[in-house]
Length: 274
Image (tube, rainbow, N blue to C red; front, side, top):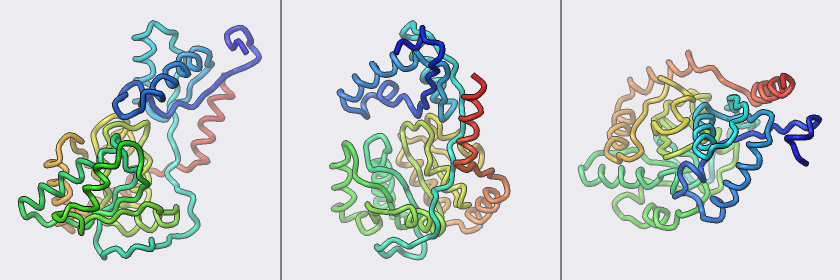
């Protein structure tokens, strides 16, 4: 269908991120090639593009402008926070009473390597760090960091890998962790940050891309390029119960949750306004 000539057909795609273009080092050559070709065709023929963050709007507009392409109407909508679970269930692997949590596929873009080096640095400085539970499957370019987590004698007893966590397990992990950490280099949104805030759990996260849009000043940010800064923030929060308590109270008081029904309504209303 020629969408530019057929006025009865309206194309409204949802654009999550521009990862293969903005951070191509985290994607395979095949994905980069297909993504660029698809984006040029899809965005050019769209009546409206719904984007999951203002950062995605900026990335898409900048790329189209650089390539001298038409920029369609780009509109932001917020993704839902709720996981959709009906109950919380503890994972099969036993966890200590006090632990911190990182949720996300173990892959290069998610930057678990910085967590590894943060814990290595703490071990070298003899700084006590909490157990880190990582909930996520092994993804692309993850072999090396996965092996380090599992075999390095200096930190392996402090890292628990939860590769098959269900939605019910995730709900339990958010509810029972003292803190969540999210070191990603690039995101279209960053759902684990929103999910943590929904559960009232304090978050320290990367200051990159869309992540600051999620929780504003309710989240404490760090540079994903600095394992030392990550180590310091983890230690600061995990060793200070008063800080954790005050942060949790602030989140519970100020964070405004978004349901998936809310997300649907935003998209539907935007489409009906075309």
